Amino acid sequence: MAAPKRFPDRQPIAEARAEAERLDAGEEAAEPRRLAGRVMGRRDLGKLVFLDLVDRSGRLQLLYEPAKTGDLELNLGDLVGVEGIPMRTRRGEPSLRVAELIVLSRIRRPLPDTFHGLTDVEQRYRRRYLDLLMNEDTRRDFQIRGRMVAAIRGHLDGAGFVEVETPILQPRYGGAFAEPFVTHYNALDEERYLRIATELYLKRLIVGGLEKVYEIGADFRNEGVSFKHHPEFTMLEWYEAYADYRDTMARIEDVVSEAAEAAVGSSRVSFRGHEVDLTPPWRRIRFVEALEERELWTRDPGELRAWLDGRGVDTSKDEDWPQLVDHAFSHYVEPGLVQPTIVHDYPIELSPFARSTDHDPLLTERFEYFVGGMELGNAFSEINDPNDQAERFAMQKGLAAGEQGDPDYVEALSYGMPPTGGLGLGIDRLAMVLTGRESIRDVILFPALRTR
Image (cartoon, rainbow, N blue to C red; front, side, top):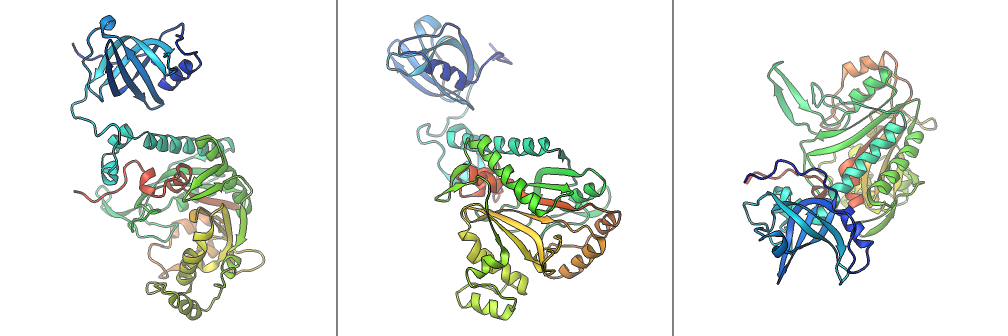
C-alpha cells in the first residue's frame, strides 16, 4: 500500500509533551492527540515497544503494544504519523500510548550513530540535513536565528520602515571596501558584480521619498574565510530620514536587545567564554579615545608603523595611515570590547559616506558596535550633499580595492536627500552571539566548502 500523501490535524510534539507533563504518574489524558515525526529510538521490552518520536519542537516517548496495534515494522529514521493518548508512565516519563501508527516515509540509508550524532565538523557542514536531523543543538540554533530575524523585522515594521529589495547584480559595486565577485550578464552583454553592500541603492530610495527603508539579504565579498568572515553572508541595512547617528545608536540597542529576548528569552547570553549583557544602554567611546587608552593614537604613519612592527604585527600590506590605524584598532582595541560597546567619531579617511562632526571636520558621525570582541556592524549620519560625496569618492579612489565612484548615485543626491541615519548589521554575527557559536559556519545553513 502506498504511503499517505498527507497527515492532517497533527500538533507539535512539544505541546503533547507539555500536556503529559501536567499529569500525575500513571495518569492518562482524556482526549487523543495526533503527532508526526521521525523515529529516533527503539527499545523492545516484552509486550511493549518504546519509541522516541522527534519533530522540530521536541521529543516524546511512544508506548506501542503490538498485541493490540499489530506487528511493528520500523527502522530508525522512518517518518510516522501516530494517534494516541498522552499519559505519564508510573516512573513519571511523559509519553503517548499509541492507538494507531502509519508509516509516512521509510528511510533508505542508515542514520549515523544516533547516540553520538553527527560529530565530524566537515560532514556537518557538507550534509547539513543530517546535522539538523541528528543534532538537537543544531536545530535549536537555526530556530533561534529564525526568531531573531523575525524580531528584527517586527521592530522595523512596527517603527514604520518599508522592507525593500535592491539589485544583487550591479553595474558598479560600492558601499564598502571589498573585492567583488564578477559575472557576465548575457542578455545585456555587460559585466556585472555581485553586490558587496545594499547601501547606495537603499539611499536612492530615501531620495525617492520612502523615508524609512530596510533590506535583509545576501551580500558577497570575494575574500578570505575566518571564524567571522564568509564570502556569502546576510546583512541588514536600514536608512531612516530625518535621523542621525545618535538616533541610530539608540535604535540598534533596542533592536539587538529585543531580538535576543525573542530568540533566547533573555538579553543576557554566553559568548566566547563571557557573559554578555545586551540590555541598553551600551557603553560609548570615541574612536580616538579608544586608541588613546592603549597609547596608540597618532596621525603619523611612520610612528604608527614602527609601533606595530616593534610588537610583531605584520604591516607589509598596510599602504597608508588609514590602513595602519584600522589595523591597530582591530588588533589591539576590538578584542577587548567584550560587553556591548559603541565606538564613534571615526577619522574622515576611514569613512567615505559619513558626515563630518560639528566639532571637528576631520572626524565623522560614524560608529561601529562590538560584542564579545567582534564587530557586529557599522553606521553613519549619511552624506547628503552631492559635491561632498563626489569629493569623498575622489579621496578614496586608489586607497583601497573594492570602492568605486558612482556618478549615478551622486546625481541622485543632487535631487536632494534629507538628513539620514543608516546602519548595517551582520545577521550571521548576531546569530553567533545569540547561539554562543564561535564560527560563522555554524550559523549559516550551507557554508561554502571546497568541492570534493
